[in-house]
Amino acid sequence: MTGFVKNLGSKLELVSKAAPSSSPGMSSSSSSSSLVVLHFWASWCEPCKAMDLVFAQLAADTPHAQFFRVEAEEQLEISEEYEVTAVPFFVFLKDGVVVDKLQGANAPELANKVSKWSTINAVTVPMAAAAAAAAVAGPPTTQEDITKQSVVPAAPPTQSCSIQQIEKQQSETDHNKELAQLINQSPIMLFIKGNPKDPCCGFSRKVVDVLNAEGVKFGSFDVLSDDAVRQGLKEFSNWPTFPQLYVQGELLGGCDIVSEMHQSGELKELPTKEEEIDHRLKKLIHSSQTMLFMKGTPDEPRCGFSNKVVSALKEEGVEFSSFDILTDEEVRQGLKIYSNWPTYPQLYHKGELLGGCDIVLEMKESGELRSTLEG
Image 1 (cartoon, one colour):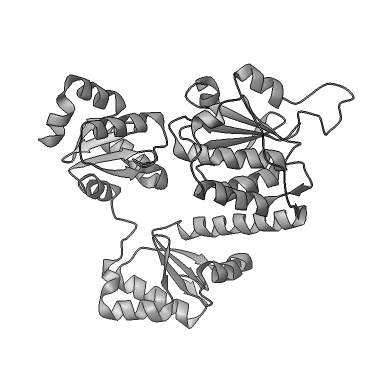
Image 2 (cartoon, helix red, strand yellow):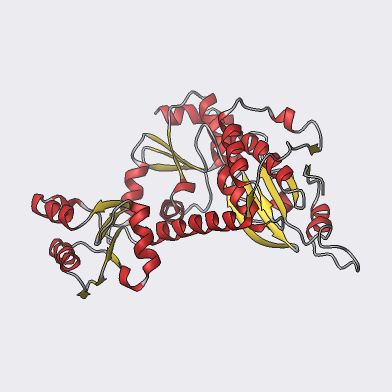
């Protein structure tokens, strides 16, 4: 291992690099049981270019791991095997087995995952994160510069931290993710002492009574049952007491605020669990005359099909709005059922589905696209 990033040319090459070694007498430092990290990228994707710099830095910081770039749309067999639907996308392998994945241009999280799965006993997370920020904020690097050689040299490491520090940082990150998932379990989520049927403090009882009086449907969590959640949520939300009421993942407040909103009538405006996803989808679809549901944004598409549709609309001079379905799993899955169309992108005009990538490109080729969308 030399701390370099290599371009992966075939699935056979990946198998030879990532599969567990059976050669007798091979030392652990040279065994293929070390970490293998794959970066799936595309030439049209700007975030991929920035993450290339981060990826190269991490390769230098972790010389006992193997780092490979995989051109997602050229190596379709590999992309399909690892279920790559957007780029940048990272896959982590140990002994040929997938142990983790990461989607998106999240440099600090990439550094953390490399640290977690690496066999090195000192990894430069702070330095890698700083380099990541500098890479993303700095001037763009062209894909031609990145792909001039099949092997991309990486800069040498400059500082390191102990594995204990890394594990602590990773533990805090994981705990915050768990809290965020817990908060988003329900559109309206109440963290109380006890449960709605048997609150264990007067303030919790008062909030439960108010929500029930308003007919608000809500989920709940008993903070007395898990001290890690109880203490962690105080720091996570910067709110020292309970109960805590969250609406669509955002902290609304405690007992006093809920009581004030009840008196003012504002609580009646809260969404409920019974709100139909169809109603939300209709509002999104009709939020613009021409609406594109895609992976990523028009400035940074996250799949080739989305990129093609965006390019077609821009070339026709069509004004349109967009929604990144990667940011909202409810919309992503719900729209497939609503439209009876299983893939993305999806283009809507005046509330009606026109179709996906193939149909949009066919309409552009025949000259129908502009006239349809301007009508």
